[in-house]
Image 1 (cartoon, rainbow, N blue to C red):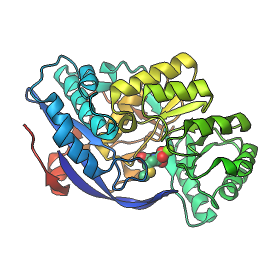
Image 2: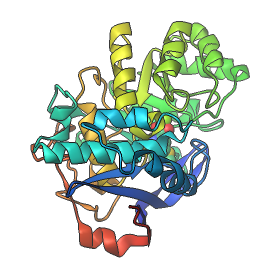
Image 3: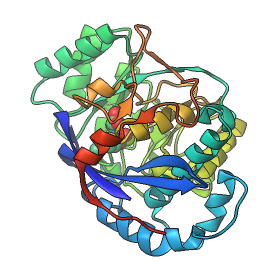
Image 4: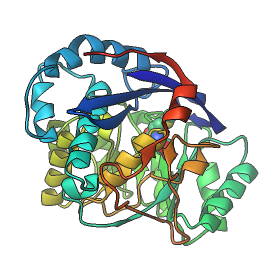
Length: 361
Ligand code: SMG
Ligand code: MG
């Protein structure tokens, strides 16, 4: 395990706070001499979810690693069950599990996306734009992302920064795929305001209400025309099943870390496919390693909507993988042909960014 620190090219602001410097926990595993890499997407503080870099470090070292060390297994798909005695801590689990998937794919000399059963090599990409000082700045940023080719625009909203910016963008860009993400900044009592957003034919409203409150989203969805997309609320297949059965959402954002790895992500993906609920891959300001895993996940068949998976340069002056992730002029990323995640971790650069390191055996 190691922690690296990377400054973002620009601060990223959501309804719960602002990030300028990422602390990123990376996991490298050695599987019979083959390295596999995973990234823990826990934040610096417990504001998106309860996990942090510190809790993940502790749980990985003291509970998850002891659950797998020295145990023989035939495939990365077995790891999920081996970690099941630990409740929660999905981001810590996801980092370890993803590293094992990378190693298995490298051992088999297969691209990870093919090992996972991915069906599309070209994935559609959107961008997530943080809260801006004013509407002019927001509009300029949207212009820039559209010019780069991105297929849909998501903006962050919070009380006081919602209908105004959305109305302004809709007037300026009547035809783009537009959506908003509130990161749980509203309550059911904000219904009239959220209903005002229905006028702007948004693709979806992401996570307007409480981070673990599926029931209130069902209440809200009954009164909104715009589909709700759940992010923070969905931690497992069981949550997804409940949310769909209650009518709490029409769309689900899947993040590897939030659900605890590929096995859980695939279960949610398969359930949503069966229920006719489209999914897309979320982002967590990842370095190239997490970004590469998101690309692999996005190749599964029901990832039909553009995800928050974007070029390295949108966040980093220099990424930690070779080559960097790039996006085509059509706003797509091509899943790589190389083994494993298909991008090589740049060891020297990773070493130079490392602030702590612990080897477990
Ligand atoms: O990686 O492009 C990215 C960020 C996408 O908006 C994004 N993520 O709620 O979906 C979300 C947020 C969570 C992270 S904010 C620090
Ligand atoms: Mg979100």
